[in-house]
Length: 304
Image (cartoon, rainbow, N blue to C red; front, top):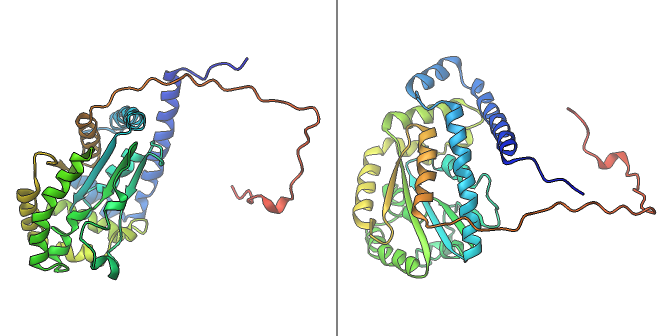
C-alpha cells in the first residue's frame, strides 16, 4: 500500500526552501551591477519588509490564488486583470508572481506587440477581443487597449480624434464585458520620477535586464509630464462603477506585489472547492518487461 504524501507542514517547508533558492538565483544577478550603482540602488530603495516575511506572505497568497483558480475552473467564471502603468513600474513582476504557481491552461498572460498594418485598419478593440477569457479562465493583460490613452497618445501614434473616440467607446465596451459575466479588474502601477530613473539606470548597466529597455522607454523619460496629464484624463474618463481603476504604489517592489495580489483576492468572491483526495497508485510490474538500452548520443551531456 502506498503511503500518503508528507504533511502540509513539511510540504510548505519544501516550498519555502524552493522559493529561497529562487531568491538566491535572483540575488545572484546583482553582481552584474557595478558596486557603486548597487550601493546607490540599495540606499535609494530601502524596504522594512524583510525577505523571509515577504516570501512567507507571498507563498500564503499564492496558495489562495490556487484556490481562486480552482473556483474559476469549477464555476466557469471569467476573470480579466488589466495591468497598466509607467515603464518599469513593476507590472511584469506582479504578473509573474500571480501566475507563477497557476495552471497555464487556466491562467494566461496576454502581451500583444504593436498592431500590424491590417490591425490598424480594424475596430480598435478588435485585436483584443480574441484574447478575452472564456469560462474557467483567468487572463492578465500586460498592457491593454489603454495603450491608446497612454503611449499612443503621448507618442502621437494616434490622432486626438482617435483618442476622443476611444474615450467615448471604452466605458460602454467594458460595461459590455461586465454584462457578459467577465470580472474586470483594472490596475495602474505607480512609481515616482526618481524611482523610474533609478530602475532605468539599472537596466542600462545590467546585461541581464538590458532587453527590458527600449527606445520607447527612453523617450517616455523625456515626456514624463505628458504621460502624467494623459494618465489623469484617462482616470477621469474611464473610472466607471462597473470597472473602476485601482492604483498600486510600486516604489517598494515587495509590498507592491503582496498588496496587489491581496487586493485581487479580495475583489473576487471565490470559495475553496472540495476535491477528491489523490492517492498515488502502485506501479504495475510485468515479469516480461525489459527496458531497452538507448544510445548515449540521445542524452544531454552531463556538463555539471
